[in-house]
Length: 145
Image (tube, rainbow, N blue to C red):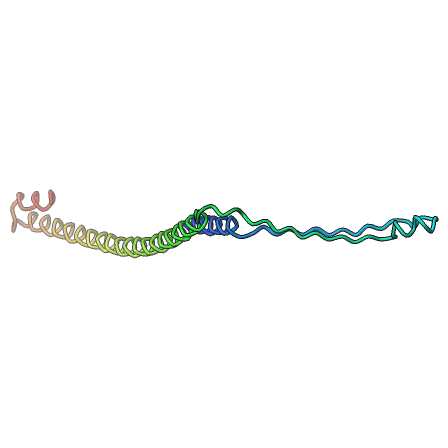
């Protein structure tokens, strides 16, 4: 989601670049040997400096650029909302999974304890059946449970 936010920010920069003027600069420094002729020396100096600044403004196209810029800003807001929503969902899932694990671990402990109680009950019925205090059907019912 963060990558989508970064892409939306870059699209905003591109939309802004379509509205703003393009500025470029170029500078040169030219150096040459002096001619020996005094007359040619006056027309050909030893060094020449030149600079050029160019500004290009895109042609006005009926506020379409501004609409595209606003659209990209809204897209950025949407991507930021989606990122935050994903973060909240992730936190909720982590908390839910944590409590599910705690529940399942407690369920395992309860089942182990229940199994121990049933084994103890079967042992008690076996002892009682051997002494004749209980009949075999009670022992079989406990074992099947």
